[in-house]
Amino acid sequence: MKNSITILGLFMSTLICAQQTPQYSQYQRNQFMVNPAAAGVYDFVDLTLSGRWQWLGVQDAPRTSYFAFSVPVRFKPKFYNPGIRTSSGVVENPEIHTGKLKHTFGGQLLADQYGAFRKMSFSGTYAIHIPMTKKVNLSFGLKAGLSNNTFFAHQAQVLNVMEPGQNPYIDNTYDNFIQNQSNKFLMDMGAGLYMYSQKFFLGLSAEQLTRDLVHFGQGTANFNPQIHFNLIGGYKIPIGENLSITPGFLLKYMSPAPLSVDGNVQFEYKKWVWLTLGYRHTDAMIVMAGMNISERFKVGYSYDYSLSRFNNFSSGGHELTLGLMLGR
Image 1 (spheres, rainbow, N blue to C red):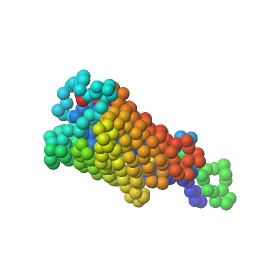
Image 2: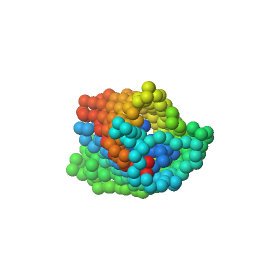
Image 3: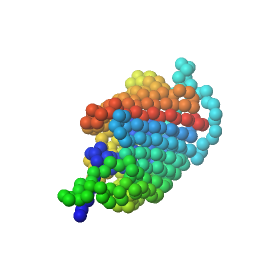
Image 4: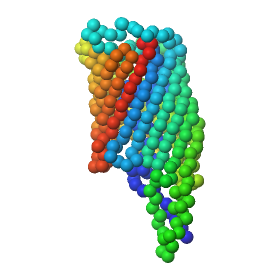
């Protein structure tokens, strides 16, 4: 007698196949999370705490939180620098410095949960920034750590298709499935290249390079990590003395899923406050805003308005980011 188990919902199957790594809306302001080579572009200690809630109103929708930090090797403590506050009282964004060799160490702590699946990971990073010219640097970054992938079988909805004549009170397949909870630690590695100046940035990175097969629930469910490729870029266009516009993009690819395309335009006023309008192909329209609160703190918020069928069930998505800058 043959039993077949189906985890209900196209929602869950879509997540399992196409979203093995977290999705971010504020990627242009936090490029370190999609490319380890982007750590250390600015010459100060950068600490970031972020939370993301997708598809509010949909049960078991993705929730992501992370803490990331990067520390330049040549960092020298400067607990106050009056030069970064302008005469108007606003706190400007730091300048990008190129034309010199730099080394940066960092780390990322990530918790990502979607449905009955949860991934928690910690990784250390290293990036070396090599001057190509006085105005352009090229950096190489590596990421290595451990990830813990867990499948909570009791949270899954299971459909058992029984053959005619089967006793409805004896369901060994379901009982075996629901009793199994599995978790496994994996080596998690990534690498990236990143070229940048004060006017542009362009980076290519790869995640989940180890591609180890992970078995959850003793064979009742599988999670097969695939290599993810990210291509990010942007160009800053000054508009007058106080305003700049930076169009940017993020392309993400994981076989056999289709190419994911994100695009946005960031408006920055007096290097202090920013507003961004974004579009994720066939998925969402995005509005983002942020500012430097003080010499030390910055904050960013984004709202995703779903363009997919989830719009009928969801009130959108939210992402909040807090940053601490030391030694700038």
